[in-house]
Image (cartoon, rainbow, N blue to C red; front, top):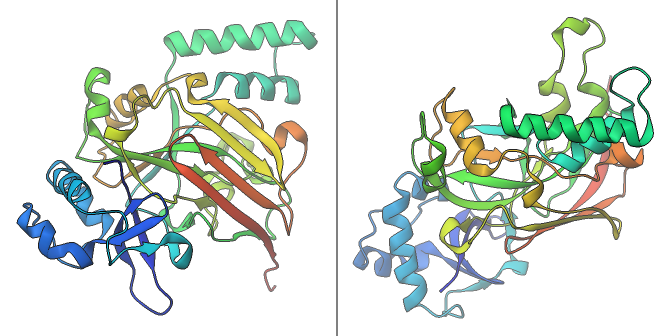
Length: 333
């Protein structure tokens, strides 16, 4: 039986890991005895991050439990009655792949007028498309870290700090690593994936480029990592239930209006290539999160950025949906 995995809490009580069958959540602590009989070696207070440290074994146990227990088990709870936290609470490492959707980068090239002198309109688009094709064939992913302290839940508010006037949305497919990965080849890369989820890599567009000393280039700390700048979840869907991560529909609405509507097929570098590239430079640990890039339709394209009172609703096929209201936070001087 298909299931997902999440982290939840009831008001005033500790967080717990739960098996999710649609809107029904079964706390793992309530079926601990069944889990032990199935071969589990976890405590009744196990977290999702702990489960990921021995993912192949724990996944097998949870699949057995899912086949044995009814989604409407006496201990199950409605997700709507719970506080929904980031499913992995919290990843130790968060890595983001930038400029990874073909149409998105082409649109940005036209929106910003970046290209050879004199090229405009269709000629500039053709140049950008050819550049993206060349990059996909012969280039490498562009990856940067984001702080885990930016993570918030799938239904929590996104706080817009007064340090930015151009906060922007970026719906992305999230990849959660299921075993240690270093120097992984592309052909084997997907076997290191525990599951998939949704993230919104909220970004302060006006803080990405350093203007005080331009040779420094980009500043990902201030532009990407304020608290709540990465809604994550609602759940982790095991990779065994996602037949093709490169064929998932993505949609983000702002106040009910569709802004992003694309497929993961538009990635320049697929999930496997990203894992290959990242693991060639750093060690990936179980529970780590890779945000795989955002498709066309960011606020930069529309010259419309997030404001107090805005509501973002994001969905990726088969992975659920997020709903985050935006609130402006004025810092005291």
